[in-house]
Length: 188
Length: 418
Image (tube, rainbow over the protein chains, first blue to last red):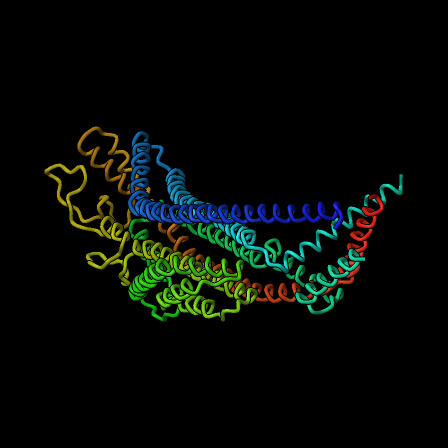
């Protein structure tokens, strides 16, 4: 064996050994990141759970408040409006008119309608916004799971077949580069 | 010569590896077809093209239009009634209130599948339905809380097994034991999870992956059903609250009756003629037989208002008493406006909203069922595509030869340089 052959063989062995060591380190690193992602996933799960619990308790509270508003609060509002209008009529009894009374009754009904429907709309909006927020968290969790799965692949020891296939791909890339270089030099 | 032999051996080795992994020649036509089918299917089922989302939007639009129409109708009736109220006699107004109550009781919502017509029977049925639904919901929530961590554990285990191709038998046995503990209430989920863990040791990623997707879809379905049940309970409760304010008794309003008339009791209280001492009465005044606003049955409402307003101006006990009476009178008329307006609207809208929610739920459920179907088709297409994309391509062989030639040329060039 000539000197150049010995150097080439040594170079190949060095590259292969160094490659193996680097590959091992990369696998180890992927495994570590995978564990970290697992913890991150758990953290998002916990956040989703906490948000869900918090929302459910708030929702129950809103519903209680709304029921109270619809049962006694609206009566109180109506009574208060009646008192004000009674004072207005008492201040000028000669000005008592049918149209005035009708207007008061229409306004009182419209106020109750607005209050009831706005409360319903607010609750619906809150529910929609919260569901959308939870869906975003859920998507984040799915992405984290995807990253974890990819890292699991990376942390695997590569099989001989895959290494050979990789070698083939590497050879193809070398070939492409060489062709490009040749084309470059011939065009000059 | 030795180098050429080495290159030849390398070629043979790589070719051998490729043959071992594919063992067939690549068919470009079929590969293009399967890739096209897979891409088009993904496009078809992509979020932007979801016909279900479109259907849900349409349901919302139609529902909003229905509610608007309902309110316009309700307002037209209300305004025509309110225009007349001041000129009604108290007797006429009481008759109007009686008619309104009978009309409103006819709106009591019917529980799906029930045939009772009686108002109080319907309300009782509604109460029972709420109770039964709440019990079901509580049981489902408890079952999900027990099952959720196990399901999560199984999914994580299966995902790892798909990625690594390895199954740890001890963990598998532990999970198999745990899956037995998933409550029977979630029977379909239990079956899928158990099916995944019963897979033979030679792991079949495509099959197991589609089962995993199916299990996730089942969890979504259970969540949707629970959300729907909770919404129904809430809606029934609100309906009950609206109808409870009209009272449970079916009988028409009658003076002296002890029946449950709900908020209509105020009309009976104030409008039924009774023997009482009149407002602003001095000790010499005799009692009168009239309603609590001192008005006879044939007196016009607007006249009573003017009378009370006039008395209210005085800063005396009579003035204060009259002022309070005027306030009660206006409050009673406002209550009528509320009943004939917003409360009638809510009673009519509640049935409409229940039907709308049911329609929305059915569309969402159909969407989930379709996703399940899509997941199965998508998995099958991807499996087919992966198979057809494989095989030894002509390019592979050409590249191999070119790579070997390049390596040989490089070595020869190296020798020349020596």
